[in-house]
Amino acid sequence: MRFPAAAATALVLAVSAHAQPAPPATDGIHPRPKPVPIRAAKIVLVGDSTMQANSGWGGSFCGYHVSSFIACVNLGRGGRSTYSYRAEGSWDLALAEMKTPGFTATYVLIQFGHNDQPGKPGRSTDLATEFPQNLRRYVAEARAAGAVPILVTPLTRRQFKDGRLVRDLDAWGEAIRKVAAETRTPIIDLLRRSSDVVEVLGAAGSARFAQLPPSPEVASAMLSGTTIAANSGATAPGSASAQNNAQVERFGDPKLSFDYTHLGAAGADFFSKLVVDELATAVPELRPQLIP
Image (cartoon, rainbow, N blue to C red; front, side, top):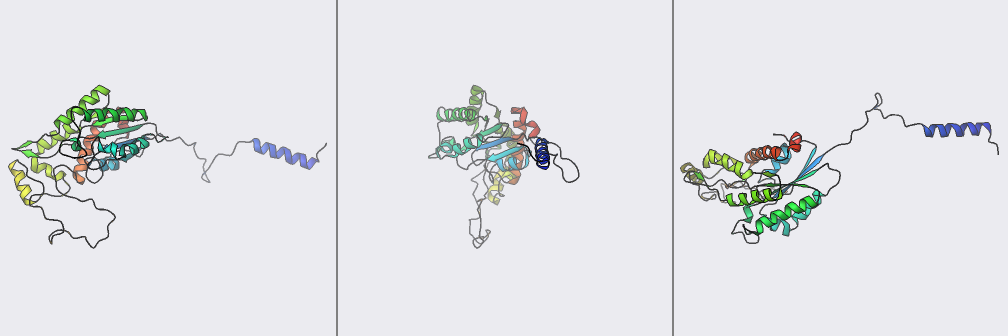
C-alpha cells in the first residue's frame, strides 16, 4: 500500500519531531541551568520543658541556629520524663519524624532528667535502673529508625545556697554520660556547660534567663546568695496589679512566670548557643549547617 506524498511527508516530520530532545527551559530570555537536587538533613528535638518552645532552648535553636538546609522539629513536651514521654505516645511521633524519607540524614537530640527525679508521681524513674535503661532503649530505637541519636544532659536549675549553685541534677547527668559512653552515642553536656555559666553569674546575675523578673522579695534574697521559693511575694494572677487579659480572646497562653528552671527569650537564646557549640563538636558533619 502506498501513502500519498503529502501524508508520507507529514508522517516523517511527526516522527522526526518526536525524536528530538525537548528544548531547554528558559525564563523567556536565558536558558535555565540544570537543577541540582537538594541535600537537606533533619534534626528532631525530644525532651521536656527546658527544651520545648516558650520555656526552653529549643525554640531559639530551631529558629535562629540552623540553616535552611536543616529541617528542625521541636517535639519537646513540658513535664515529661523518659517514662511518660514514651507512655503518652510522643516518642512514636518522634520515630515517625525520623522515618520521613528524602533527608540525607536525621539527627535526634534526646534530653531528660528533670522529671525523672523523685517526687513526680507518674513520671519519676529509678536513677540506677529504669532511667539508664530507658535512655538505652531510645538510642537503640532511634538507630533502628535510621536516625543518629545524640544524648543531652539536662539544663541546670538556677538555685543557690550560700553563694554556691545547688547541683541537684549532677547524678542524672552522670548517668547520661555513662549511657553515652556505653552505647558510643554523641553527647551534648549541657548540664556541665550551663552549670559553669550560672555558677559564675550567681543567683542575681542568672535571673535574667527566666521568663519574667523576680518579685522584690526573691530578688533581695538572691543578693544574699541563697534563693528562696520562686513565687515568694509574687503578684497573684488576676489581682488588680496583675495584667488582666480576661476580656481578650487568645489562641493560647504560654503561662509565663518567674522560676529557677524555665527560660525566657534571653535564656533560650543564650543556652541554645551552648547547645550549638557542643553539637558542632559532637557531630562535626553538622557544623556547616549550624549558626552560632
